[in-house]
Image 1 (tube, helix red, strand yellow):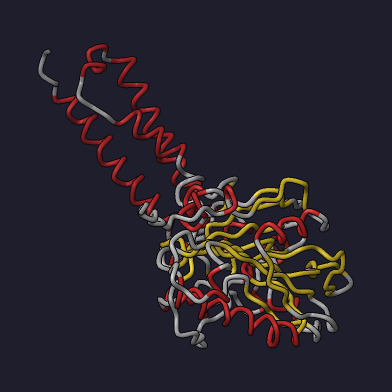
Image 2 (cartoon, rainbow, N blue to C red):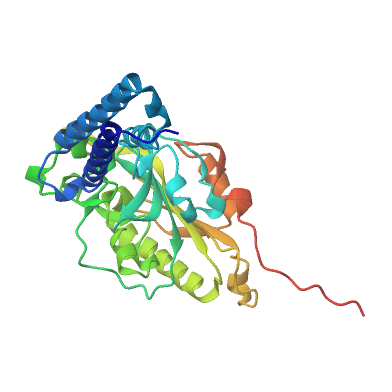
Length: 367
């Protein structure tokens, strides 16, 4: 192969400089929340740079036939950069691929319907923390799926409320961000998800987490639960009374008797009622809250009164002022109950194959 001419070497150097610049622009875009420049301007500049690179490559190919043999690996990489502009780092998509570790057997629950469903990998501090199925048309989380961490039950009180940027715009950062003051909230945020102002006049309701911070141990995992896409409106006496008692009971049970990973899914059923603000329907109100856990490896020597609650068990409660006691039931009973609720269909399945025990039972020796 003939040596590269000085002209081709200059081409190659220019291309390398342009690629380095485009990489820097891509990093800037992915962390744009720390920048003063508007994202749309950054995106435009980035695309222009990539177009320039492609044009130069085409010119090189047309003007120099032996350029095809030069060891320049720019074209494919450039196209990958261009294709990755909108999808790199995405946390809102059509699948839970980026956070499937929080789902039992990496499989999401089935049979849960909605108007405009978004699958959110809840990301905080550049790390996925849990998964949420969010109905943008109702501005309501339908469920959050997470792995339980052994905890002392203490709440983190210093975390500001956050929102999911990619529900407002796919080009936004993948990390949840602190909600801006109400007078500075972007209309795209209010259109795509619930905001704090939606709860101001809803005096009967509190912000109830589906993934509670009491079920997490790490401070960042706890902080990640304070996003409004993990929150549903709950009757105050319900969230502070029977549901809080149930959440703590599960914490103690899994702390004491689960010997492996505990997968938890907590969700809602739809009532048809909404919270209104400024004369508009803003957020759907759940009829029930339900929850189920799956602990494939558990203490088989646990007391009888809890042993039958493994590897899986479940519960549900009515989100109303009267009659909001929480009923614990088997996983199959909960799934049968959900099949008859609004927004569910006949193939409701929370855990694949009903959560299979991984405990190895010793066979008795024959005498």
